[in-house]
Image (tube, rainbow, N blue to C red; front, side, top):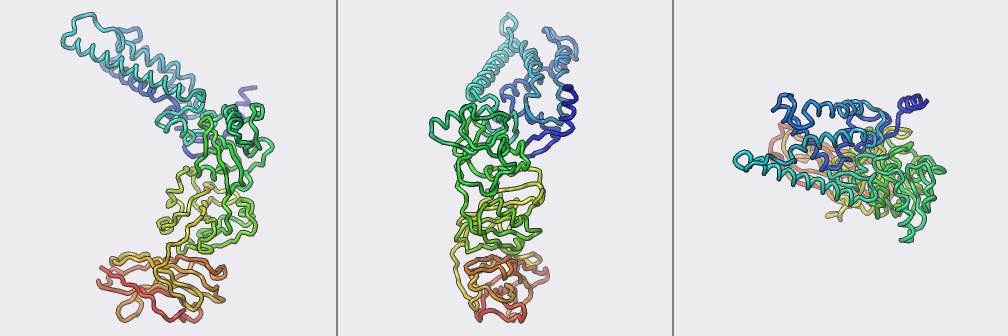
Length: 526
């Protein structure tokens, strides 16, 4: 009966996590990686040393019996079970913990001792001359090295006491960073509840919104909490997951990594923020103050990712202003960035959750031209990497991410104000020049306009045109700021020399310009 239940479990799959990936049927490299990051590093070094010693002995003796009790052939038999077990683990679809590797450890330890024992034992009782003296020095160095490695192992164990389950070695960045690699029984199986209850009592922390992978009530350990996903009595998906409600949160490393959640990215908002405390290395405490945003601007290229209902449910902000724009050619700052808000964009489906420092690597998700702009108040806040009821998408918080102070202000017919331009002074023939113009909305027009950028010669006739507008005028409101991206494809046959960039705006129905002042800037083509 137990075997049949195991077969059913394997056929259904099991939630697992590896290096930012969530899956149901595991990965061939899961256990090799788990062994590398969960086994104490000095023991890995001892294993490597022993393997090198064994191979050297096999070459020297050509598989003949050695003079010590464990010959090379016998050691092969000793390592046969771990080798077969390792090969079987590569095909396992149940990737839930380093604990499944525990059967190989006794064989490895005995094998390491058998390989290194003769090297560390007493040498020949003869006068230390020539090679014998060298051999004795090597033995002393080897004993010292083994002593250092064993001391290192003991100290590493003492430093993590009593949170042994959460141990990760230095290859993973230590015990506080192991959750980036593995989850489930590798990090948190509820062993932090006592420490959490003690912290609540000593610090007067009060009740927390608790998320953990457990089948029992943490209140039995004195934890004062309100359950959130995936705990019993909690909604399947965290309400306001894109902008969590105010309060104190305690999020387990296991659920932070998406195990076992309906949406693995449910707690991605927390992944992009540093906790104010880590209990037992793997229980993260957050003091959440939601963003009081007033608008959300969504890129419509390739699609608008969030429906109105998804925005209301995910952000929990009533009366939010909704804006859409084409982020390949425009960037909108609703209200000029004076009030906070959000940006959202559909992204290609990906297999990895974003690392917590992804806000510093936003160019992976944003168009390059926007990522390169000096918007200090723009920070990645949420990523849903997989398609579901909504397409894969990324969200950024905009809190004080307005444009720099303009160097030149020219109002055009009371409709828009020109704030400036960002353009190179020199361009090469045969390349595409990228130019940004900056605008502020004064009065939304009742008919369509376009923002122009022409490259012309001395006669004023346009040679290259880069007009466009990625922000529909029917959505404009006074005070909005707009960055328009213009691409000028310069023909490789264009003669070298000085040319003029002419910026402005015009009515689409009549092609009549807005304003009378000509906005010109110099560009040299080489």
